[in-house]
Image 1: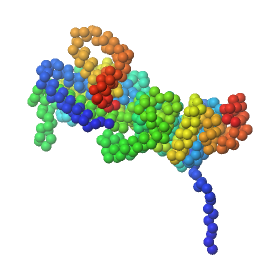
Image 2 (image 1 turned 90 degrees about the vertical axis):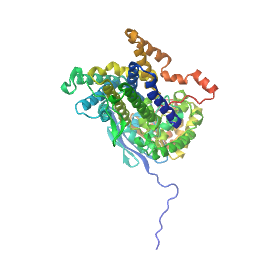
Image 3 (image 1 turned 120 degrees about the vertical axis):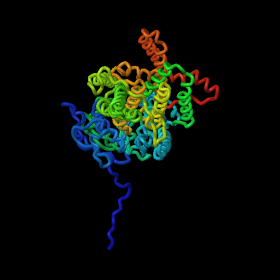
Image 4 (image 1 turned 180 degrees about the vertical axis):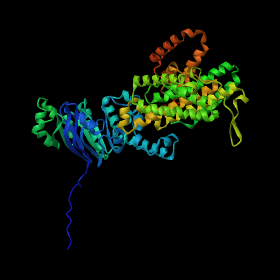
Length: 272
Length: 335
């Protein structure tokens, strides 16, 4: 007699690419982040939101190893990366963007993107210096990758502009281009919508979706609620350093805890 | 990218300088000054490499002293050939740089400048109080001129005392400088140079895309110290003596100023800056009491009108217009 193996329909279960487990960060007596846990699944757009001063930025820094958590673990693709040096975290495939004051000011867009490809090469320093076969192959790969990234982020037309002369929206796209240059599996965006008008917001939403379609999981920390609601698959809300809600945008919009947290802020900020 | 025709142009220029100048210039004095400018340029290139990663390095004088003393001690005490000694001098300076760098390269801006400046003074004092080993205040003199270098019985370089020593010294300085320029040129033109510039503009951002900034800072500083040691080793043999005051804090500061004058965005910057300032002051010796004044005014003027150095003139608007009218490619520079 044959045993019927049940076949589940739809998508296969996706493994978490990032697991944040009971992470806390205390500065002296102040708890900036308290016992926060969540999982980011491969291929999704995941957002962390919260009112000003909720601990979003601290959490962001903990995940990217700019800060070391007081307690808890950050597991990336099955590997504990807690407290690892930031460049190693980046090399493993978790790359962050900065707000636009942190740029390679005097480089053109194409130079900055090419230079950000440092970890993708196979050749060592001596190989690069003596232009070994591996180094020449790396250069060809970097050219192709730079081309693809500039296309994806609609930066072709400003490829020869110096970074410091770019308007804000393009500058942010350049920040994402540089992050993508390190060929991340998980891209962490630091307030990608801050200070943008609605046209720029629409463009940025399109860009983030295309990045996800290219196979990169995206996690963002953001203050702009309407944009987050439109873009994200799942959202975690934190307030006073604690997780107060987690779920799909519809659940978040109707969560009483979230509404209470944002009480006192304009209704439109919630995007309801 | 370095194009091969640029390399050929550079090699021909270097050859013309190294071979041509001794034919034209008969004055030993001028030949000596040119050789010193070349030697200083090598040391300045080392300072330039540290500037390339965004650190103002006021320790190059110390590395030159270390290199000079290594050559002095090895050749006079142990009878080591100059050719071996100068290579060893470069590597010992580099080793000192790496050890020092491990501790101090996380510092930035004025803090790094101050600690390297202190290092220059510390090395001078150490050599001054080094007893018999370093020769104290008088240093070490009667360093032999470079001897013959032969391989398998074939003379590659004749002993300097068998030819015109002054010309030989000049040629040596020119060859070492050309090699130093090639080294720095290659570094700045390959991907390592791009990463150095990234680090100069934002270490945090460079680190976020996976650059091991701690490692690369050490590499840059180590190579810079190596060049300092080579330059110092050259001077030890050319002047046949070393003493603790040979390179001091003012020299360390000047070396960085040379880079700024020539332009830190260009590999040739430190060389152009060194030749301009060093030769300028040598030929204007009559006005020596005004040297500091002229220096200061020059630097102020530079910061106002040419913040990117003399070589940035090559990218000035009127030159670009001239080039485009005459159908030439735009100004190219490595770095």
